[in-house]
Length: 521
Image (tube, rainbow, N blue to C red; front, side, top):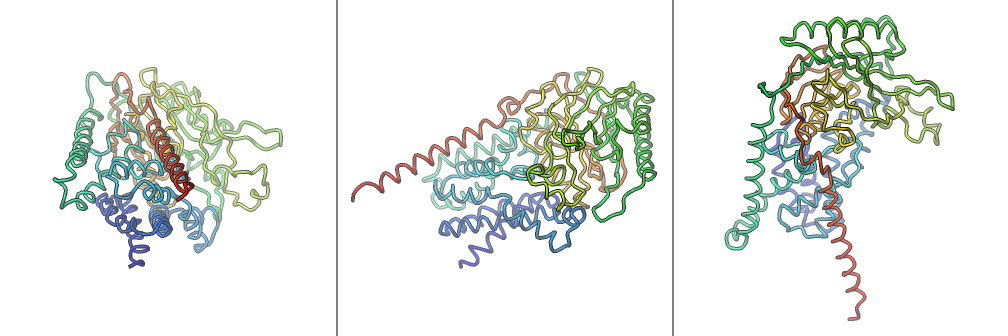
């Protein structure tokens, strides 16, 4: 019936998608999606577009429900209104499913899995998102299928995922004529599966954290600070309480250094770990500097940075990651470049000043950083800094001198999202960077969950619980020269080429269709 095809199947399709992601990680549910889509593809175009839109909404409600926590706890909205924010988000996020529905109809819905996957990737790449997530990231539940990310990036993983889940559907559709009429596409699909699996097996053996005579070692002490977040409706902490929290982080860092079985080279504090601007707080800076000097370690920590006032008299400040050397001196800093709208800045604040009065005072007004530095550890290793959700942006790392970097360091504060799946989803969306560039990633989160991921996407450390103070000691065993991947060279060029081809084919088909309509009968 139309109700089942137009409403039930889209809901089931959306459920099958979000169940494949954190924290469910039920990847097999994704293989049910093409069978739901098979019915939706038979609908008239308008009904099909609506069905795919419903599927996208359900996907977002299941995957991004935690936005209600932010709206409620830090936006001061009542529960009903906070869920309204989630619904509005779901209405407009992932409109790529609607575009995919249109492209399928335009180019033919009975195409083979490769064409279906290519059209999906075109729609996915063109779709703007607040939190960029890709269908292919769900493959981290089966890392052997994940390794081609070093060839074509996370969008390539989406191609792999959509192709793989459509192969069983395609085999079922052509089961009666498979060998007689479809031997070539069958062989192509089998070859594709064999390539993806074989490539994955080899990569999982090649990239890891095993020690060896040809490896250089970097000792990491990752600190999960669990620094308090001062909520919209909550009481502010006193300076004494803030200093007590800060001292607890210093003490935990010393404990982590003392407990490490090997020499610690770098201590990593998360974003939001220090209440006070480090450069403007002599007592705070002195304690961090002493930690570095006494233990002969590098320390990196997230803090606000106040630069001064602008021409309008407003304070100019940044979300900054500072780096101290073993002498206790600041040798570098990285100012966050990609700021979160309505969290770290107010869009159009200068043109619409009334927004600042309407919105909660928990929204910061950070300025954007401009440079992308690489930091060294005694010149034996180099690391690349990322703050918060910069680690989920495909291609962002290409602006750095990433070929020099041996590993990535991401400092994050996911405390805004409450004790939810958001932190786990953040990890899932960040994981492709490790395979795309074949570099381990140290992920230090203020409220958790923190972990260290190797160059094949495996979590090689313990994974901390949320909202606890904890630390991770681990030694990275790194190749003498950082690997260079195909993706690190070509970036997202292949998908833009596919987009161009699809656009040209669309224009050509549209033009000839109009020409035929103009011809006299």
